[in-house]
Amino acid sequence: MDYQKILQSIQRDIEPLKSEGQQADYIPALAAVNPDQWGICINTLDNKQYTLGDSAVPFSLQSITKVFALAMALSLEGDNLWTRMGKEPSGTAFNSLIQLELEKGKPRNPFINSGALVMADVLVERLPNPEAAFIGLARDLSGCPSIDYNFEVARSEHSVAYLNTAIANLLKYHGNIHGDIDRVLRFYFMMCSIEMNCQQLAHAFLAFADHRKPFDHAGFQLTSSQVKRMNAIMQTCGFYDEAGEFSYLVGLPGKSGVGGGIAAVFPGQYSVAVWSPRLNAKGNSVMGMKSLELLTTHSRQSIF
Ligand code: GLN
Image (cartoon, rainbow, N blue to C red; front, side, top):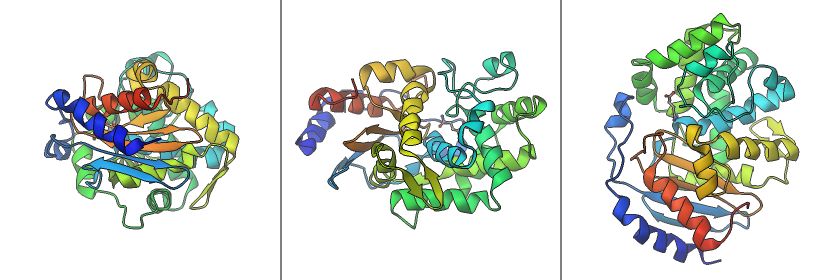
């Protein structure tokens, strides 16, 4: 498959969308990012890499890190994790409170903010130094020891954390956060602040593309069956209330973040990371989604 040629045609085809959408600005530090950037990288399981555009420019991973959090939480808790959250698509925004109130503090899935806050609580409770363990996993998966938190982005998000604080309070009220709320929120914002470029992010997702191999990274282990099930959750819950649309247009398990990144996998074949800061109304990258739609259309490869 000539993925490089496909990437070039994608770059041409997405050109008309280049000023559609807006970058996230509810986190002040993200408002400062130049929105007119686009990069993509494919890493195949047979060790080939195809990149184009701004694929070496680091960006804020935001909710994409919820996939790493799930790998750690599942490794530590196994199926017990599902006593504290579900694995159903939410059909609501990533930071919605409505469903959480109706469902008495049990998040629909791990990839919305409420689910990730419960996972952050698990990691804070179970690990002596969750920040060190989390960045250790991100470095191991990306193959890049220089990966780090962006403390400024974490601080910036914490300074306007009205909704996430409300979610954490609701969870705590229902007994679904065991630890100190502020400690859990601080760790959550740190997780979201990690930066990678498309090349590093595609590398990090190879571990999920390789779903027939058990996961063993930085001291966290998952069976191949657990890796397969993580892909299932990415497929059904990876794009908030646009998970159906992404599944329909792209047909790959993946996860987006409000930094404009999307990571996806074609199980058994490749991982792909795409980044472009302008988001649609649901908080997903406009050019990122289109790029992946074109990738699976032109390559005629998807899980369907
Ligand atoms: N840190 C962001 C938040 O909690 C992550 C959201 C996202 O990427 N969808 O609002």
